[in-house]
Image (cartoon, rainbow, N blue to C red; front, side, top):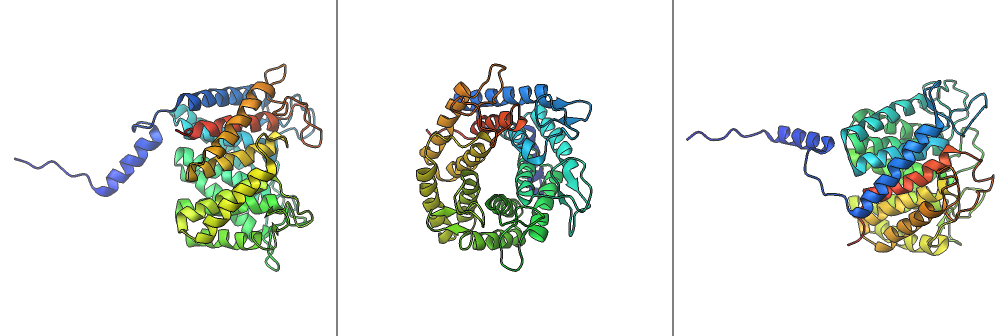
Length: 377
């Protein structure tokens, strides 16, 4: 009797990856809660595309009815929409959702400025090409994270390469080689907690994806400064900047998750202890129902949900779910857009201008990431 042909292990690996990415492999069905959040996220994305898309320029405007000379969304304006599209495809990787990620990621590459030195990086406005363009290092961190999530959603290495470019630029031009810390932008006004948080997490996630010692070394270098000079001992959390020690939630969340993930990846006891202590301190300081502004609070909750995925702490899931409940019921304006705060108030001008895409997209991203994670049993 003839023996059945054996499939080479390498081919098995390839087939498994293809099936996983195509959605053909059996996947755990989404819970009812995840399906509800996914529906909310899809609706939020569709309304953003309908109201803020700019067909003439082939991208999105920063504000409704924008009549400025440069109306298109900057990186900081649109990164929550990028993350929303990514998260929907991670939650339910249909061919249509993965195509949506690819379309968005291709558009996101328009921000790559090859004129920057010493290496290319992402400048704030699409099409920037001048080496003298003022560029923000936290933008590069957030954009790199969004590209990395696009890679998670699709398996397309092009997006992984784009994420690597962002970190390379931060490390080459943002990191202060003399005293440490990451500058806010290319004018070097101060060391920024936002740049430190996004850059550290990006390095950590690239290490997770590639197992490259270079990325682990970069993450450790950034964390070495964060846990000493960049730490506010009086607050028990990371400083907002080198000028102001006040902690900000969307700085803390990524740094907490970076160390929780390193605890899982490297079994370093210090990472485990710090992430646990920082989580407790952050919950105590920022409270349960957040009222900073959606674009900041959504980032914090995105990464606290990621911590939940590691430690199964139902408090962290409840934190995100309860804020999402308030956002769903209170943040909609009369046009069906998420342009109000999560407690139903008009956002102050220092946090959001009227009709900003970022406000709509930030709340949408919270729903999208809740669709990714199963609720506690």
